[in-house]
Image 1 (tube, rainbow over the protein chains, first blue to last red):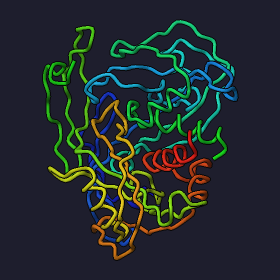
Image 2 (cartoon, each protein chain N blue to C red):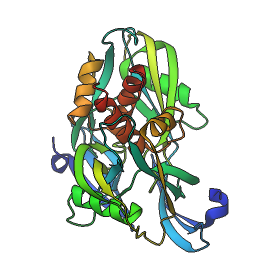
Image 3 (tube, rainbow over the protein chains, first blue to last red):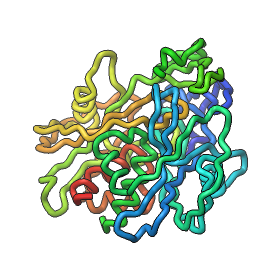
Length: 184
Length: 184
């Protein structure tokens, strides 16, 4: 059943800068009708910049230490941002990498696309890894408070393990790259 | 700077069954004032049930195949759900495991707690792994359409790698357990 078939009615509650909130009447797979809150989101891309050879012994990666109001302080994240209208996920990843870190990359590899929290939003995040990095000048938006933090891949994974990296897209990207590098 | 210090004003836009949407005026770290949409969420727990010895050669895990309106169809997930008022994350994990799969577990190990998408929500998800499983009868909520799918850990990781597992909490939990089992 597609969403078009499932949707009985949709009420737009709020149109914001980032998200739109709808309350939809939905026909469930058993034919029953229920009401669901759904946050419409344009989707996002996130990208892990790897400074040295990804197949080398312990590559350097770049993380951001970023103030997040929702997280009540600074958290570590990989560069990421929302898709602009009509923008391809890889173009968004390249743009966010440049804006947030000043870096350009020779190679961008798609990893996987995930629903961030499918219980209440249609947001999907497209994950990438970037290698062949050239560093440059960042050009951040006014409400982004970001410090670029280079560290070893090993250290970043330790920070996932012990909970210092609290951002889901960052944890999953580091674990994905590390795990499949290790031949899992 | 804590959120209390950062918050200049807060307007409740919508109070829903699952989420509350606020538009807050926020003082950023540089002293400037801006407006942010923030979805208040009570938090959630998710738990990976491992049927056979986690340290054995290829343990069996249980996934759910679940209809999600926001994902426009059925996706694979581990058991998960929202915290009830005052509920401890581990109690929520045990409850959701029982409700969604009918399983009880001898051992519940906390893994890590992550912000699902800190750009627009304060939702944190607490991840757990369960071993020493006894299977029983599920007791699902009316709007949950769920099939329990046992599979090998190896197969589940293949489905993360090739994008068949599209749910972020499920991908990160499988990769976390697999990666740190492998000594990453």
